[in-house]
Length: 512
Image 1: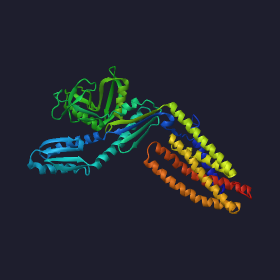
Image 2: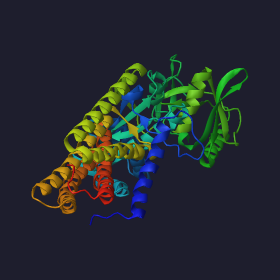
Image 3: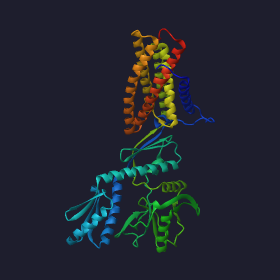
Image 4: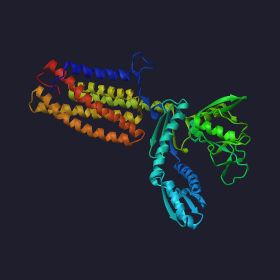
């Protein structure tokens, strides 16, 4: 039915007005009182900055899990009063090889090992090969552990990046073991790479009585300054995961890192310092000994300091890493791209020129071929552009060069819809229908076709957004939003303008 109530017209006008207000912050420098302040963020290719693709070291994840399992196996066999000839890791095949002490203990060993792996169903398999037992990580557990590690790593990376004061960083998963990091405005991300290249796993160990030789249950670790090694016990007495806070501060005219433990960490720290007064204690960060002070007395307050040759920056960075938490495994930069501000400005200029040129050509085409109805289509097209920008602003989305291409393509799709409507109306006029009938039948027959074609395109681009990454997602996002706004402006705004004109003029012929 070709009728729009006054209330409906006011509603459509209100939507367009709100959209214009949402767009306004993108074109003014300072906020206005009572004006919603949401802006579209520019991507790296428009603003300049750095792109880092990080890969999680899944081999380290597997090795750490097998190392933990090795300790559990030793304890399980010890609890069952069973010995063993050898326990060793096979990192190549993600397994642990246990050789029984005697043939007569084989069944008892199997029973103890089956009981151990039953505690985590689906994580391990147990096989017997050549007189030894082999416990292996399953493929599903390896993938699951990698996915969980990437999820944790994203949060830790986010905390580390936020602590540096970076503005509008973008952090997202890519695949099963990769993370994409975009840093607008940062053209030289060396400090960021240094922060992300550090796992920041801190542990506290007692030193071996023989400081320079590793025996059973001990490991030689290098000193952080590179001068020598010390043997530390493999047992972790206090875990850095129990740190509640860390801060860089001055003590006796040198920079130190002050530590504060949570309740469990404070209890462990008090227990180990009380029982080992006079013994050296190693503070280990990522397999390197930061310092090895002697325990002078019990420390029960749950606080301590790390001394060393720290500068203000290195002490601050270490405190930042400890506050953010340890990465579950090392992250490696496998790809890096930097875009300078001048190149970003050139991209913005090129994008605006292409959008403006495309818009002007479309406007002229519609005016030339469809006269007054083309003018109404141009108004709807401008409203479409405003609505797209308003939605992007409302959600503070990031706009990239492919996203601008998506907007330009959307304008072309919107023109197609208006052309379809005008051609259907023109066809009805040729068939001899009166103006009112031509408008009604033309809109009715074109509407179904427009909805069908846009619905399929909408679903296709939603899938592209869900499964795509990076620039592909931004391209899909702008087109998906554009399809929705195209339906609104073509089937409602453009139609309302034509109906309003017809109700006022009542022409005998349609100017189409």
